[in-house]
Image 1 (cartoon, rainbow, N blue to C red):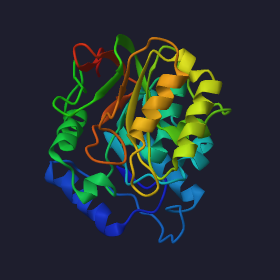
Image 2: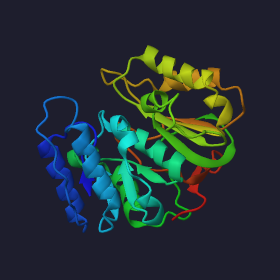
Image 3: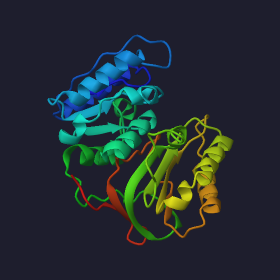
Length: 289
């Protein structure tokens, strides 16, 4: 099932993404969306109906989201997610879908995937590294899968080893859920963050919010992905510096990890138990499904 639960997708890019899914042997059902000129793909009621239908219909093995943007958070309290406990599905999205992924982990302990979407990077064309990890997510059982990006340069800001549930995603969505009943505990988790279209001072503000909320004192590791400004400039180094200043505990921190709104974009197993070991260059699934 491909649903548009957030912003309105570009039709041509979405069609390219659907064609890519079909070419790899997947049966695809696209849920319709309105011809919205605003920032929502359709009304809250319609987007809720489509997603609830996709969740409850057992003929769907997976739910992919056409694109992010904004809108999923508006319907979190209208979703009927209990059927996923007895009939789990592969669920993949990122950006605005971070809100759903955190909610599903908190309420049901359900793992998801944070990765490319049909009307986004998939529809525009993936690089070889991004496609490799998308295939791993779609076609393997994840046991022992290593998500360290091989030859891609990743900065080890603070070395170490830890084991924890991988939680996070778009940092603005993590911060937006604070003070609600939809944000899980980050105690002993490996937090990963990325975002786009924000000036540096807002990244500073969001990092400071995580610090003041005690999240940086709770986590056992940190992965900093693509952190991009409103003009396409990278703020990854600046956010790495902020992390070093704000996190006193000797936990492993890596930065420049290829995940987020830029390519390469490695698909990550949100909510699964992972081992991060900077010495072994390993980000490995401890238990898979």
